[in-house]
Amino acid sequence: MVIERLIINVFVILIPVLIYSLKAEGSWKIQRSLTMFFFMSGAVVLCMIFSVEIESVQWDLRYVPILLAFLYGGKRAGWGVVGFAVLMRVMLGGDLFITGILLIVVTAILFHFVSHRFSSMPPKWPRVWFVMVVALIPSLIQTVVTVFLLQSGVTAGEEPLWSTGLEYVLFLSGASFLITHLFETLLERERIIAELVAAEKDHTMGELAASIAHEVRNPLTVVKGFIQLLAEDKSQAEYHKLILSELDRAESIIYEYLNASKPQENSVISLDNCVEQVVSLLAPYAEKNGVLLDSSIKPSIQINSNENKLKQALINFVKNAIEATPDQGSVTVLLKATKDKTIIEIKDTGSGMTKEQLKQLGTAYFTTKESGTGIGTMVSIRMIEMMDGTVTYKSAITKGTKVEVVLPRVKS
Image (cartoon, rainbow, N blue to C red; front, side, top):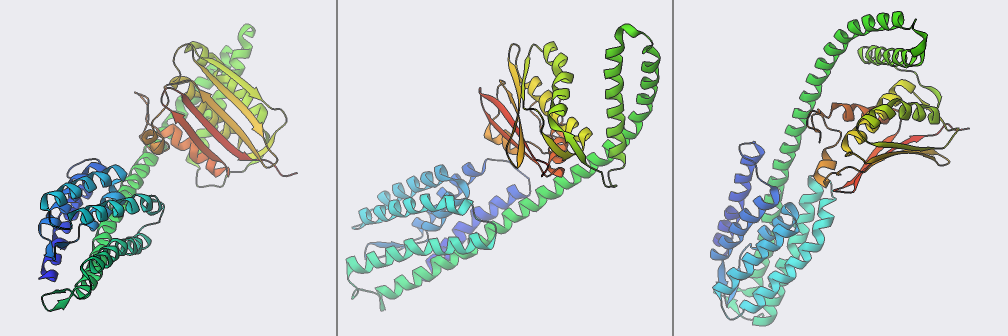
């Protein structure tokens, strides 16, 4: 009788997991924590309905959906399911219902503290074995407490109570292994699908960008020719020189993109001069947007890099900061250096971003701007990474955003 009811419990828990697989197929969307709360609450209630009661002790797999809610839905979902389990245990009553409630609460506290460890573990098998071991603890506690309270001589029919407890422990650990393995397989499939979609987007974007870059070169050449003719007006020679310089840089960027398969040579450049040029170039743009662009640059910092690509990346970061800053706000560019690395900080006083938005930064087609595509930020981050550097974003709502670009220094 015990085994039959526990098998029913397994199917009761499997049904929500299989329904969740529909989400993996993309047929409907819902927040995972809310999904786990509703599904596992239903599972824990059904497990307790189809439990086996022996000497006022209920044997079922209620701890499995509680554990899954904590690990896959988060602490809020987990405690929500615990609330349903406690309420159901009160409704079922019995001589030892207070002991049952205490076991549920103690187990929930344990699951609460191990959930952080679980989230930092790599998928798939380390998580499966971890869940199996953790699930053993509440089942062992219930068996030991039950045998101690009811005395080991009490039997369930012709079977000793400790033997029933042993069957329960083995069944619960096996069910935890099976269900977690299935859940991890579904999540792994989700990750693979997401990676395939991202790869397809990148491939399409690459083909589109290459065709656009090829076509843009022709009008650039024409514009450059007419600017050279206008340069004969000596009164605006400084502006003509800046325009020609930027046209040369744009042409160089397009040429490098079209020849991306060829190795690009780096050289030792003056980072302070590079950053000063970027700030000078974007100062009129900041003034036009009503934003104060300030800078603090430490002189004489040498790095090994591609100057055009570095300028392109920094221009994108500073331009994004200016566009994210409201009128009368400010953007500050700081250049600092340690013995081994250089740090470029770009801070704005904009509206900031949420944690969810920060996680998506650097992916194609994600942007906080109404007319943006997110491609510029993604390309800029990849450029810095190709220079053995890193890009870190720190932001909070109403407190602005800070971009930290770290690059290695030239070893003397």
